[in-house]
View 1 (cartoon, rainbow, N blue to C red):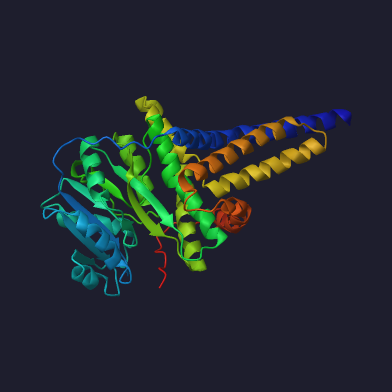
View 2: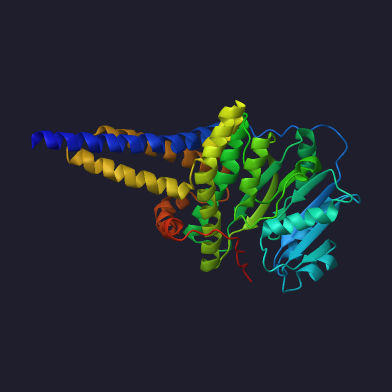
Length: 402
């Protein structure tokens, strides 16, 4: 009996140590990226001092009549007479196209109820400009605001690097934000600004994040975007990286959206993003790793490690569950070693998040937001269970606030 108890204790200790070692990979990557970002001086992205390239800005839009004019008004002043601003009104049942034209943009309309999604709309837009292509194509979502000079910055970096370029894409909190809104904005900040800044400081590429994306025509013309992939931007950046043109992060160009106020809209948006992220993580991390080894490219391994970091709330939830199990094992006298390892990993997460907030988010996000993180994680748990039971696989537009 004593021998059986020893065997069980050893097995539990080994299992917990394996879990701790597995979690160390994404936690270590998160800590390294955030720490590198803290050390960065956020210097301007290198761009050749060449004449400003010609640009076509594509805006895919599905029933965006309420907000398309505001988006257009932030882009038009940044364009030259040689540039184009094209709104693709995709399966719209409202006045999106008419309002876009009245606001100074060109607009084309697409009706195809069988093939819905942002990818199909963008592919349609690219086909419409291929007879007289620009030097650079920039893609902006219909509910986003482009900060001044962002278009030129993206275009110049795209030409200089001859690679995809990603602007800083952040979410503004709605008026009178809830603690959940603030934590969501913080998670977005870590994912779309802090971690890419760290990768840039370390000399590695990053991923596309869906809007504020620039492509040299020579790069984008060879890509088929026609799909309903719910994270088509992430998949596209992985495909391009493997093909030899990884994404350049341009933090000084900035595009902002706004978190939805409606509870169901926020849930729908998060479900689409995070189910897509997890699906891509599971399917593409092995592919990137294999490509890295075959091509002997460490930049692909860096992208694979970055992709292996799950959404922040899920990572914290996984760590909490493992740490609770390790603490129970320590209390029962099985072993304290897993609890020590996991406690160190928890400290790394804490340092990464607090450091990211202190340098990048302190002005816009209250410090009390950090106290709401546990409640935010509880809100997200059903979303992750949904991924296991009934994952979202098709593109669904987030309802806009009226």
